[in-house]
Amino acid sequence: MAERSAGPLGRLLDGSVPDRETLPWYVAPIPAIIEDLGLRLAWLVVAVNLAGTAFGFFYYRFQFGLEPLLAWPFVPDSPVATLFIALSIASWKLGESREWLNALAFFGCLKLGLWTPYTLLVFQDAFLASTPLWLYLFLFFSHLAMAVQAFVIYRYSEFPVWAVALALAWYGCNDLVDYFVPVVGTYHHTAIPVQPIVDGVIEHVTPAHQLLAAGALALTLLATFLALATRVKKLEAHAG
Image (cartoon, helix red, strand yellow):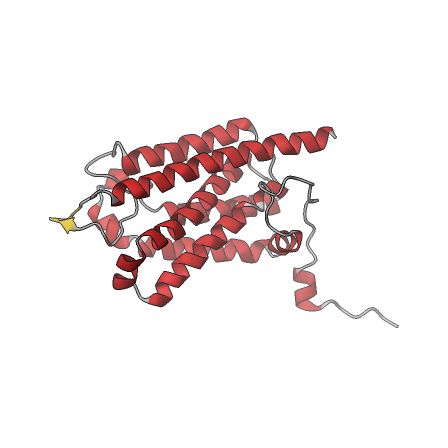
């Protein structure tokens, strides 16, 4: 009997994926079946992230109008993170995995993927008073999905120290200009509903500003630890 064709879905899911190493749960918390599915559907994941990038830039259109042009690179943090992961996965699929891009994608998706839900929960009343429920839920769960994606990158990346240092430099710089030393004008983090806008300038009131900064700094430290821990545990696994 002739073998039946696997069909479009079967062919789509038939891509090869890197082996899954035995690593501690805290650097590889996602079940293997989900990791494998995401890697097999790599081009679909790339397309979804590019769509998210486009939506993100549209979402930030109002804040772009308030920020000086020089500060624009530091404003759209989430769309830049989804662009990083899209390019990271695409580069891997094309056989040209770039470690610097992988590290930026890991930091961006983990940090923004958790910072946004944290912010939505801490300032829930203000967001729900000014944001449709469907958009609130979309922002919450779509950003959590970004964090999930971050934990798949280790399958095709070694997280060399120099790449982690580069990612830390970029996201550390973001923290500085977002909360402590703005490039021009006022701070450049994502505007939230509890911050009034006076004469076209976002007022960064406390304690809201402090809560936002604390979450961002904690997540930058977490991303640094997890990236370096992944590096160490992968080296230990190779040596064993």
